[in-house]
Length: 84
Image (cartoon, rainbow, N blue to C red; front, side, top):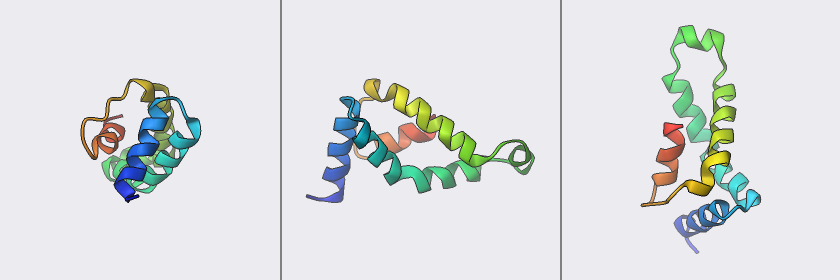
């Protein structure tokens, strides 16, 4: 089984409500999403809010909305996380 198919399987199970799969897929994207958030924060904003706090809120929103996520292509989940 390739990495892509493992990721796809985790995503489909997460969409169906499997919280363990959701946690695992979040771990796959955690580092990249953290870097993305840090790159988007201005120095002034960094003084007021921590990137990890934004990441936490992002993952909470993703967990709440995962049931309505529709995977359209490879990478769509990663893109969706970045829009949150």
